[in-house]
Length: 281
Image (cartoon, rainbow, N blue to C red; front, side):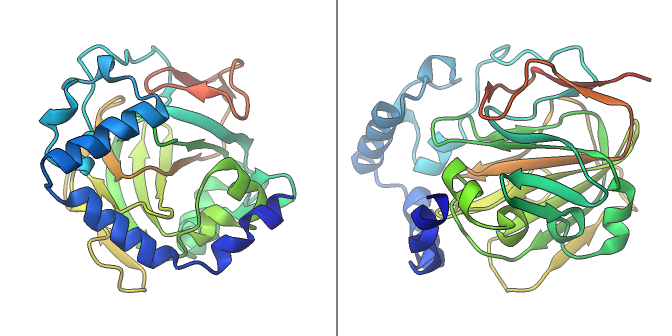
């Protein structure tokens, strides 16, 4: 049933729709923009009470509203080794089977494919752990650090722009390794780890705090930036990036004695800053 539901996505003009949505979301159109934002808040049940700026009319563009800041203290950071980096819903999490990550029933993909095809980048994550979290339209769309990290490398991997909702995850083989994505590689307290921002239909762009918008253009080839000679260090809970229209984040960690929060389960809603996992050793 899921495969039938996603068949139209193989034929409709996803890139054209995405470019148009990005253009609309970035335009300052006064009362039209405010009306669009108010309708969005109503239709998706967005909680504006927790926003730093709760007045829809204060946002000049839809993108400004979509990437709105939260009030201080709205998302306390748990005393855990790894915290949830976003508001969203758990797609999947658990162990990496050698190089293979579970996507949904009947679907898997590899760490090598996810990270852009370089086997050397995937090697540290053999038998490691992963977590995939989907951000719905109503969610807060800034992405924060699950733990401390020093940025080593960033890779923009071109790809498809399938939707990333749960139905599509169940119906499109290798979805996360097929869609456009930004791979951020860090060195952390327990070794290397990666946070991957996955693009989707109508996701206008992805940006990081150290680079800005990464995919202002889509040249159709892998691009990368190395930061070995810089000290870009971010603390657990600090903002690291944003989605301009929502999507999915995937985290992968090397093999270790890692225990995920026992309250976690696929499809469960989660919030930025809550306990994600702790090391037992």
